[in-house]
Length: 169
View 1 (cartoon, rainbow, N blue to C red):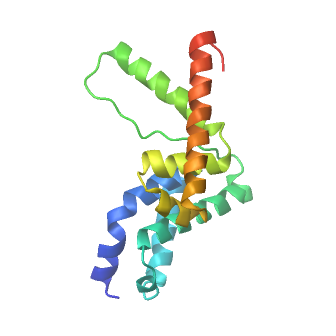
View 2 (cartoon, rainbow, N blue to C red):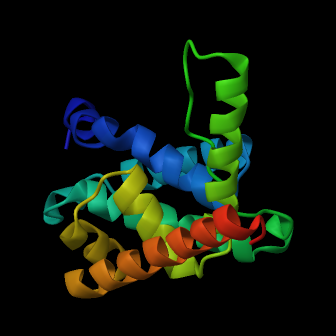
């Protein structure tokens, strides 16, 4: 595989790799390091990439595994899961604050989910992967991905409704 072929096969999803790493590792610097490490590993094994039907799914799985390894390491003991990928333009300050508060609230609720539900929410609702691709990445059947996503959304919805009605989570 030439350098040009390699770049054509892996560059289209580099932002998704970074966002998943950022979701899992929090720190922009850690996510950048993870992305760089992933691309280095892909480059070292570029001849084997032709064996994979879906290089993107393979790379996302590698990213997930690398990030989990980092989270388990002693160096990363203070990392947590967050996501700050939303930006609003040209709205009044009050609306911006209201939107940001809502986004932060959803982030907190996502953080409270079990690990697998967090990943499924990230991959489906933020990265827009289909159920089969997520299933391959997480070693789940597509129906299990659907059930996990449904449970995660239901949990978030119930907590939002509870807070809206009673002012507490």
